[in-house]
Every structure is written in C-alpha cells, then in structure tokens.
Image (spheres, rainbow, N blue to C red):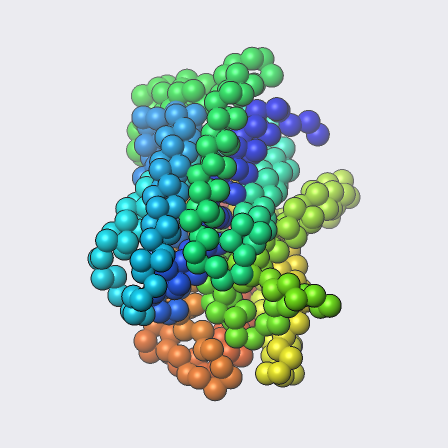
Length: 473
C-alpha cells in the first residue's frame, strides 16, 4: 500500500500546525485563570466558546476554498493569520506582572489585556479555519480512483495530527513548567515559531504536491477544476440541486456529526474540566522525585497513545479486511462510543476508593487516555474518510467545514459541561443552570450514560443507516 509523497508533506504541515494550535489550547484555560484572572467556571465555559469559533469558521472557510480559493492558498493564508495570533498572545501574556493584582472575575471587563486577548482569538479563529479545513480536504485530492486507500490515508494523517498534539504540551512542560504564568509568553512564542517553520516547509516542498503523472494538486478551487467533474459539465457542478442519493448521503453525514459531537464533547474534558480535576484530585508528583507534572502535560497523553496505536489499528483493519471480518464503518462508530464510555469508568474506579491524603495515582489518567483513544480511532479518522466519500464532489471542502462546525458545537457543549464539574465529593453544580450535578462522581457517570446510550442506539439502527449510504463503506 503506497501513498503519494504529497500526502506526507500535507500531513507533516498539519502536524506542525497542530503543534502550534495545541500550544494555544494547552495554555488557554490556565492563561485565562492566572493571567486574565477569570474564574475557573468562566474560563472553561469561554474555552468552549473560543474553540467553537475556530471550528465554526471552518464552514465559511470551506465554502470559500471550494469556490474561490485553492487549497494551497487557503493553507498559506491560514498559517500567516495563526502566526499573527500567536504573536498577539505572546504580547498579552507578557503583561502578566502588570495584572498580578487584578481581582478574579466571571465576565469580560474589556480592559486592555482582554481586548488584546480577543484580538488574538479573532486571528486564531480565522487562521485555524482556513488552514484546518483546507489541509483536511487536501488529503482526498491525492486519491482519485483509489478510494480504497482513503481509510489508511486518513489514519496516517490523523496520526500526524496527534504527533503535533503530543509534542505541544510535552514541550510546554519544559518551557513554562508547572503553573508559571510569567512564562506563558514563551509558550505562545514557541507556537508562532513552529507554525512559521511548518508553513515554510509547505511552500518549499510545494513542487511535490502532485499526482504520480506530475499533475499539481490543490492549485485551483474544486468548483473550477474540470478534473473533478467526471461526466458532468462545469455548469452542473455549480448547480445547488442535489440528487436523492446525495440527499440521503448528506443525511448520513449529519448522523455522523452527532457521533462526533458526543465524542469530542467527552474528549475535550481533558483540556477543560480535567485541568480542575487534576489540581484537586490527582497526585502529580512523580514517585521517588520532587518533579511535579504540570496539568497541561496530561493533555499530551491521548495524542501519544494515538501515535502508538494508529499503526496497530491500520494492521488490524487490513488483517480483518483480508478475512472479510472487518466491522462496517457504521458499527465502528457505535463500538467507539461504548469504548469511550469505558474511559470514564477508569476514573470512577479510583474515585470509589478516593483518599484525600494520597489522592489518585496518575496511572488512572493513562488508562482513561488508552480507552478514550481506542474510541477515537474508531470514530475520528474513520469519519474523515467516510464523510469525504459521502460528500457530493462539488461540496467536498464545504462538507469538511460542516464537520468542523459540528466540532464547534461539541466545544460549546464541552465548555458548558466542564463549567459544571464539582470540585469535591459533596459540592453541587448546575449543568445548563437547571440540572444538578452532585459531586465529581456524578459528573463522570453522566458521560458514561450518555456515551453508552448513544452507542447502543447507533448499533441498533446501523442497518437502516447503512442503506442510506447507497453502497458507500
């Protein structure tokens, strides 16, 4: 199974973009709490809104890329905007000393540092939107007539994404240490340098972004490229009317988006509520040393597990496929949701035997990461491939934008859920202002119930959903 060199260049470019983006993500909650002095609940809620905005704009970016901007130009535009964003955050974080006496608050006061912060968020939203949707749809352009390679291609691509996601918090642990807000500016500066390096590599190697016959890929918008019209005319690809089969497949895409929302809502607790959970319930001291692990370092564990398990996953799917025993794409989603529920059980077990003196061993967070990643590998890379197959050709990048807009919804949900995490066994927090969450164990049980219920329903109705794909696997 040989993949084109261009795919690896695009995947590597995405790896460095994810490194930069996860520098931003890893610091964000602590930055808002310790530099801008937002309350923990407001910080996690605002985290969801900010991350949602970066994904939601990808819907617009996908449309612009398909219609007016080529994938290559969109990636360059997005990368440049992200560099500006990281430099803005670098400056804002450098104001920490001047903000030390600012009282904690639960609203945006729109003082000077907060306005600078919102400006940085704006540039990150625009930059990440253009970059992410374009680089994701770019992968599929290398595989015309080789759709059978898409699952493994997107799994490889997803592995590169997670290499960047692992490196960011891991390196940050040594750059900014544990709870050193005066050093956050150097973390953001690192993010700017990394995305600059990735963008420079992409531009320098652009001549390799081509098909085996030497034809360049991603140089013009799909809506203006006759190569993707097949037996249709240029006028037909610009028509908005969809066939019955296309409508059915888009409906399946919408159902897949529900799975993505539920999964990402759960996964994003690592970046939000688990920061607070980590500070209060987990023993972060490495045994036999005095070295304290920073809360953001735990964010690197799931990407590391993805890197380790992705090659194993590819070999398992190949082996099962040869024996005609590989689960259908539909079944993988349901199984992935149920396994993700087991991840939260891995935190419920030590909570049942919790000792406030010794706290929870870090190994339980590792076990959580293993199970949540197994669920991830059954859902996320498969969904990228599945959506690329189901999407009408004329709306390829747009459908990727729709997928990331669903991720935006999941980020908002994640922030709302995270704001309701109790900090003790007896504290009661309100979810959505109306649902009481009594203690941290109830918080974990909530995710178990939601994920198991969704997984079972998906498996029960899998046959009917499969019929709507009209043969797409």
